[in-house]
Image (cartoon, rainbow, N blue to C red; front, side):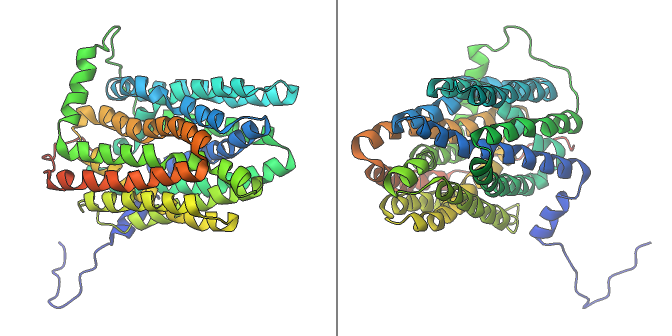
Length: 425
């Protein structure tokens, strides 16, 4: 029998931060978090090496934008099919299969570098392969957290997952800087290839095996469009998606063209570039840690909108900044803004989405975030070639602030959908 509480004695309740941090020490989530950290460190190591390698091979700003577009463009055509795979197939096989194909791409680049035969078009083709496999597997990856935590822990789990992603943004560029100075770009691509292995094994372990319900020919246009219509017809979900799309399309290209700003405008070198990208990771980590203190039950619309507007403002400041040493400070602020905006929108979507449409909802989130960045990167590559990097990014930032102000009113007036029961992991 439990002893009665004495009158006047303080009742200690765990803070939102304590509840969030406790997840990190659970067996399945903790292992997933660490394996994802290793994988993302490898990814960011390559993300630093690849654009700098392209510039070293004589690539123009348009080619840099084209490479970014090739990496993310398949999201526009394939990501919703990936969402159906996440909802109706064995996600273990989806993740393991496509991640294995991705692992071959950095291995091929290492071979091309060692043989001295690498050309910009080869890198772009391999980026396209990675983009295709990402589009088909990323919705399955994004549904891992809701699969291994309780519904009320989804927001905390996503915030914790964002901390490892942004910690990798710090460690990856730092490692890339050392490898580029020591063994060259080949070392960065080799590290990325090796980083796939632990994540594939962990995904196979933590996700429950389930029979695929995707039959041949089942991806009918009626089924796919029906899911889009249901999700897009909800003003609450639509507001989150449109906000992420606007900021990714207009502000995301800033990150794509940081190497152009550093090398061609601010006259910096690869160490300045890696330090600047690491600073963005610091900001992202600060933003993700800050989200751990936010009550999971809080309405996140205003937070998403305020930080989306801040991202537009930072893009303007980056465009007019005249000092190479001032760029990292601005990118810390950009990292905070982007991560708080996107993670808050993601938590809102995953909590409010129907369980049977969660994969498809997240596929639309990925389409808005990464697809918007890819299309924005391609179009900004054109404007950079015509107007210059500063003027192109300045225009993007101003348009982003205007877009957020237009989106805000109807979204804040919308009502959240009623919560649907879900199975506990």
